[in-house]
Image (cartoon, rainbow, N blue to C red; front, side, top):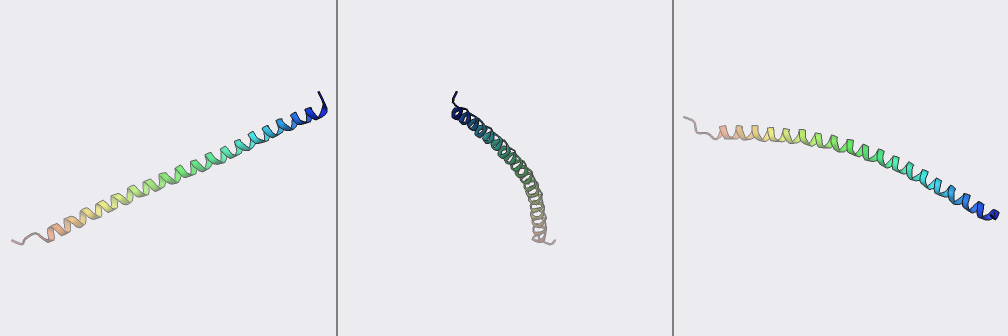
Length: 74
């Protein structure tokens, strides 16, 4: 086999190997970012749940207060 053919083969294999390593690194980084986003979304979801309950409680209390304020006095 001519020497230049061997060098081209080695170079091609090295480029493929480097590309695969880069892909693995990028995939790991992507998975870390996805995991962090999932955590953030869970926190936001929990916060919204708590806020919704507070709003519902406030509306309920306000409704009860205004309803008794408008009752006729006997």
